[in-house]
Image (cartoon, rainbow, N blue to C red; front, side):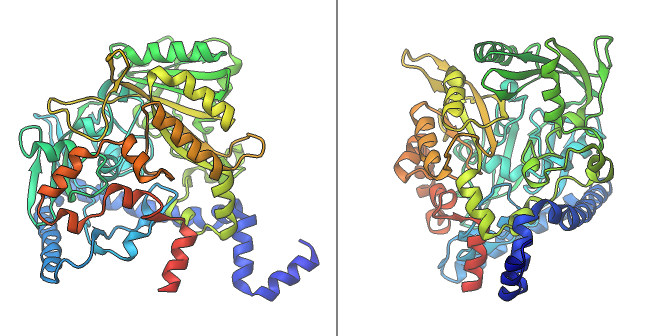
Length: 533
């Protein structure tokens, strides 16, 4: 550091020095400070969840916790229903890079519900509270020989977030989005009533709660389908070396639900990708070797897969089931490479790989003005859900406008229902042919397009998605106008239902008001708002 710069920092005080370190030595700060804090917190959460699960103490407390939610709404009604309502859960804990700013002005309803309530093996159902995480479910269910048909990758994703928002996994070509493995929901409405919703009870609510982002009521429980677990997933990796081969093979594998329990692809350049086909298995066959990819010292999964491009032939491995489910957790797909650039170094993995990843809320909270501006201009974090018919067109768009790699591909079915209600619907071609198969295109990281500016690129990307009958995962930033937002998502049934539910429109924002820039801001902007108050 130059003497002039040192003098400048010292003159600005300790806070300026701290911000400088957070900005220019983010990887070192994350390693020395954030990783230990994250590891301790995660260990506490894991132990607490295990104790509750095995002592079976959660069910007896659940009714009391539901009543507490109802009591808070009754208090709001007695106070004249003056404020909008939202959950009190910290916005920093969401997986989005944004933080809800509406929580600063709304009445916060405390919903402290983190427990697995019941495992009904005869009905093949697990009943859970909304803040149960995927890591918690996979640990506990696998120990009992069960799993979810759709188990999204990252440990900290919650059931409530995946229902109210969006949840996809590489088994979604077979089972659909996370919402399609849900058998029932329990919500507390703005009237203070507890309602159970299923295909036969409060049907409209059942079909409209998914993607509703808390605009119909407070989710307090959900029943999820379960299937028998196996010890391994047999993964066949197929390197492909042209865009046409990728699109053709990926669609073929995605439609083959009999043979393929999981389908995924990682795209490393316009003409290089690896397609992965997975099958649940209890035995290790003679065609491949086991690979415990989840061990702390193992290479990050996407780097392991990338190395297979040099093989020029297919390879089979057997991954332990839980390792497969959370294969992208340690590296947050490939976002960790931009935070701790040396994180995949073998020495680092041996010494500290067990502590990865740092908690997302800590990463957000320690963002600085400089890193915020750099992120908003140069960084993208988006999942675009496109009809399979437009996969090639979409990949060409990302290459032309972003030149960002890797890209993550996961096929997913968007199913209709007998009532034909909901906010997303299967793709219908001009000849009226219906195709339920979509593909999630995940773009995470820094594009390599010359003179790239995401503030200019994002509106064009969202326009492309709307015009090609796609959807946007709303955990991410959106700059859509209200009109274009309603072109992307069908809210006609939702609005009718909101009008018919007592106190609903008075209590809850619209979805757009919660997920757009109206309702969310960057972590830096949120800190400024809090100071201004």
